[in-house]
Image 1 (tube, rainbow, N blue to C red):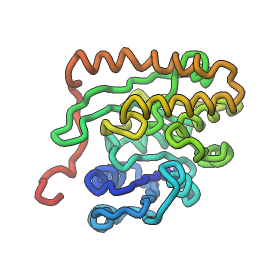
Image 2 (tube, helix red, strand yellow; image 1 turned 135 degrees about the horizontal axis):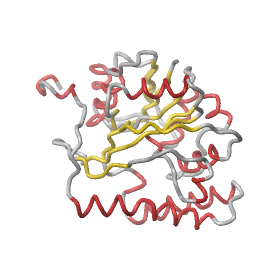
Image 3 (cartoon, helix red, strand yellow; image 1 turned 30 degrees about the vertical axis):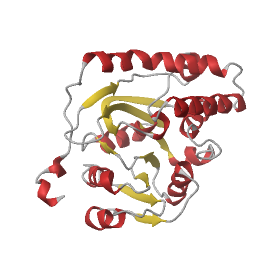
Length: 270
């Protein structure tokens, strides 16, 4: 089964190598990887020249933001399944895309796994692990559950049928998209109890209270448009579900977990 992976970037030369290498080194070989760059002014092109030989395409031009760039990549995708890998994240194991493909081959529409939040700079430390479990789509609204978007994959035809990402939402478009997917009749989901993603801390939606407040306001507006009568009830439950993991991370110290990064050795070849 062919998988399409889309990475969007802007001045991400410092971290992009990890994303590129982690796709190139996947054991599942039927993969096309698109890099959509917002017209970076750093060394992105140099990183691509060194570590992007596997790319199906590299586009560098101005865009209207993160989700516009993701939609550009999805429009170019030719696989049966699509996933989005951030330019400052990397796959946690060489088997991730193989696990994903197997689930879709058995009839899944949406597949999701676990995710680790790591410190931004090496030597990396795992600060928190997002452990998920099997859920029904209704749990998204009734219990505030949501799959981690970076660790989620969906059939490309369904992604397009749902209209992709709504670029009106500058921070919450991924949540809005997942909410729409959960309302799709007969949606078949499958959880893989393995870590898919290592994600650097410091993303757009977690840059401080103002960003978090804006993201939740956008999520509430999106839920209203989808006909949910009590959006803030759903969002309150969503926040409450995260708190135990956040508190454990802040009080329990670093999490012991291996980080798959064979391309780090030797560092002189970076």
